[in-house]
Amino acid sequence: MVKARSAPDIWLLISILLILGIGLMMVYSASAVKAFHEFGDKFYFLKRQAIFAGLGLFMMMLLSRVNYTIWKKWAPTLLIVCFGLLLVVLIPGIGVVRGGARSWLGIGSFGIQPSEFMKLAMIIFLAKWLSIEQQKITQFTKGLLPPLGLVFLAFGLIMLQPDLGTGAVMVGASMILIFTAGARMAHLGGLALLGVAGFVGLIIAAPYRLKRITYFLDPWADPLGGGYQIIQSLFAIGPGGLVGLGLGASRQKFSYLPEPQTDFIFSILAEELGFIGGTTLILLFLIVVWRGVRTAIAAPDTFGSLMAIGITSIIGVQVLINIGVVIGMMPVTGITLPLVSYGGSSLTLLLTALGILLNISRYSR
Image 1 (cartoon, rainbow, N blue to C red):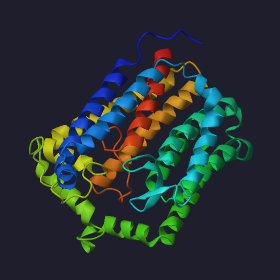
Image 2 (image 1 turned 30 degrees about the vertical axis):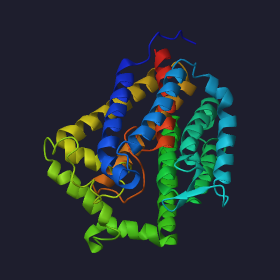
Image 3 (image 1 turned 180 degrees about the vertical axis):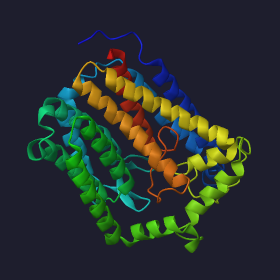
């Protein structure tokens, strides 16, 4: 094992902190009106986000100093615990229903989403599995099928909540990791076709998902119902122009765009900070992905390399889906924008995962 450098990848660290700072600023700007109207405190959402950001930063800086190889030992335990939590959250009276999905554990406004923690646990376990069994990955039955079975078992439990968005991010990041480990394109191509068929089946099985597809293709078919969010999102982005209306000057956050501080926070950012603000944020995410991939390439061992690419993929896939939804390129999925959207479990989990990535960067060649 090579000796660790005194500091992690500075480009990666600065980009993370800048995105987090933009996120806190936009959570306040997007939520102040809603918070004052509902709770009498315009800082209501910001204070909660700041608490989880502080906890996440503590975990990130702590884990950036902990040798990443320790996660190889704990990978099975983490996965088993997360599977257990996915089962517990489905029990009526224990799992809390929010937004139509029984995906939360907690009391009142504070809670955790086990599915968020499963994303990281699955990446860590797959990195261990594939680093040990990498020579078998080209064999469908012995190499590819076992890890895929675990991924889709977790996906099935997440879909029972149901939470298609989080499940899609976990599957997407896992498939990128498996591909990076050396899986054959013929195998993955065949599985992709099966996945498309399964996705179509899930849509047909739940009428509300079929409506989301319909409204995605033509939101004006139901402008006050299923197409409302996409239309209002585009109404926010359009007037932003090049430089935006100014920080805090959004009109859509005045009860036009539902939950502007979560899934559609990028719409408010584009409205207030314009094309320049939106592009700046996207460039920061691209730097995170670039430095994450570079860390994976330069990692001293296969386990570190695969874990780095998996963590980077979680960020990249989630950003792609969220912004795709906001600009009307994808159906509404309920996926938040990493480090920017309001949400305790997601924010803390992502900062924790990035702490591991920062530690891997300290050992990169």
